Amino acid sequence: MNLALFDLDNTLLAGDSDFEWAQFLISKGVLDREVHEAKNQAFYDDYKAGTLNIHAFLEFQLAPLARHARTELDAWHREFVETRIRPIIGSVARALVQRHLDGGDLCAIVTATNSFVTGPICREFGIPHLVATIPAQENGQFTGAPRGLPAFREGKITRVDAWLEALGLWWGAFEQSWFYSDSLNDLPLLQKVSHPVAVDPDDTLRAHAAAQGWPILSLR
Image 1 (cartoon, rainbow, N blue to C red):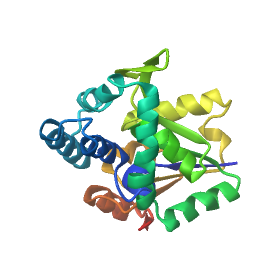
Image 2 (cartoon, rainbow, N blue to C red):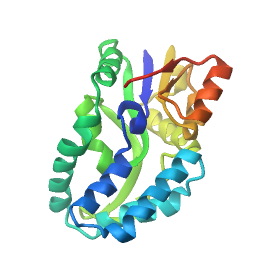
Image 3 (cartoon, one colour):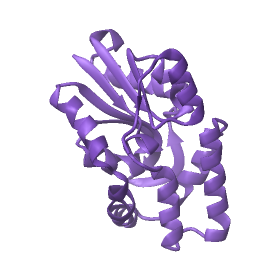
Image 4 (cartoon, rainbow, N blue to C red):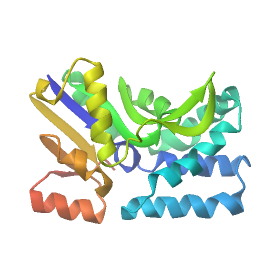
């Protein structure tokens, strides 16, 4: 059995679902443009630079979920996928995922973006498993806080370990493993798999991949 793991934002997607979700809420008037747009861009810039404070970001990103009913959020999310996400899913990305699925590989998206935003996107790709940051809920209502360890940087390895353990598996159960990512933030998990692949990588990851002889792939 083989394992295929995929980062989502700027990897399978030609854009960032976290950033786009906040921009979508701003466009709907749910979030105040003047207050939130600059913060959203600043957090995104920090992420790309490898300096993101994940806990400060999650406080910002999850707070709107706690202020609205789940039925309203779900309706907004359906519109979000249709208008913001499907246009940034390319045929090459779909084909890459399908190749691993057809090969019988155990496939998962592994992303720091929260599971409310990414769950429907994961299903859009037909990927059966999602390892994501979890927004805490009580009786179906989001609390505005994360539950457990965010799936970010080294946290992705911890969360993948726990997911595999829940399936009765471990890294040694796989003959080969892949992880596809664009980001320097994913170097820990890229270094864990037998086949790290840099996808449309940022400058830091591109340089690291070139030095290590890792494949560099474009899904655009």
